[in-house]
Length: 68
Image 1 (tube, rainbow, N blue to C red):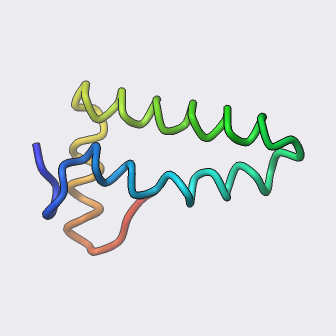
Image 2: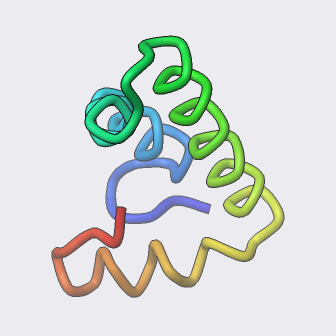
């Protein structure tokens, strides 16, 4: 279940800061941004583990661009 050289879960973890920055620009309260980022990353991980996101990650990595 690896995409490129990284396991999908590891790839998601590499986006933690980017997702948080995205959320913090849209939420004015730090705790809200943290909660939103956590929910986004958890849903993404659920999708990967269920196989829903696997093909999206694979197709994105084949183009050397990332959908996240």
